[in-house]
Image 1 (cartoon, rainbow, N blue to C red):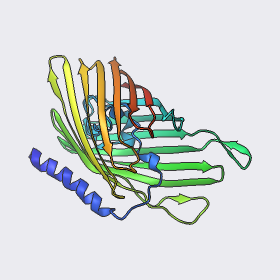
Image 2: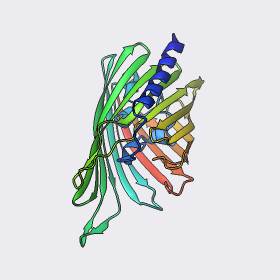
Image 3: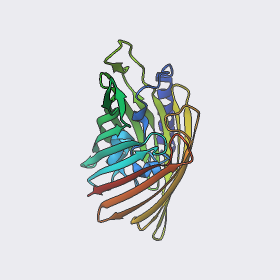
Image 4: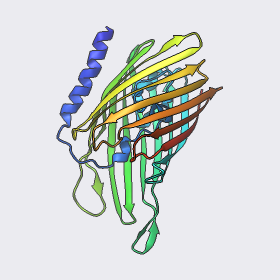
Length: 305
């Protein structure tokens, strides 16, 4: 039975690739940023994780995992200094995941990326990107869940020029006792529009596959994770990471992502640490070894009950 569920997950991802293989424009790329400090610390490899994960940011990631949370809700907020040696962008992310009964889940999320000030028409202006979204999830069997996110994304590049669109994600999740697999497609939807030109721009959907395994030895919690993705403009990436926990109180994390040239998230190393105490979560993540990322760091605070 487990083999059938895993095969269904793989076929789901492959079918999604075929549905939108003609998309080539890389618009609203910030929608694909990993806004979860825990998953980012594993280089994005742990999108399937339930145990040891921070599902507060599932509105930007995998909503299908929410029905399997061991808490009623999780909320979180984090601040990121994105590429401080290159772009010096300030990013604020916030989200929440809510489990309703045994079968349902809800996600909400908000993100704002603030870029360096520019002079436009003789006046100072700060470009920004923004994402607002939410989603629904449902457990269709004891170990299988489905989830969908819908996000409104806006890029204000000049005071009189705005690009916007609606992006959707759909995922299928297998949740076992110690093993998880996720597959699906993200960033698909109608073409993006602008306030200046009538041209519409196709989004670039991304097929995703991720898995993680939880090994517990006494008070030690070891969780390796792997992921692969294929964008419909032929860009691709693979990632591997792990986190090591002590009594689910303290964590250390690391990962590596290898991506083809032109990917929204380039190749990089990641490091992170976290602590949990009476439902309060603290997370810190550092991304490096790539000039485009330029030593990005995230600091997050959350609470779950």
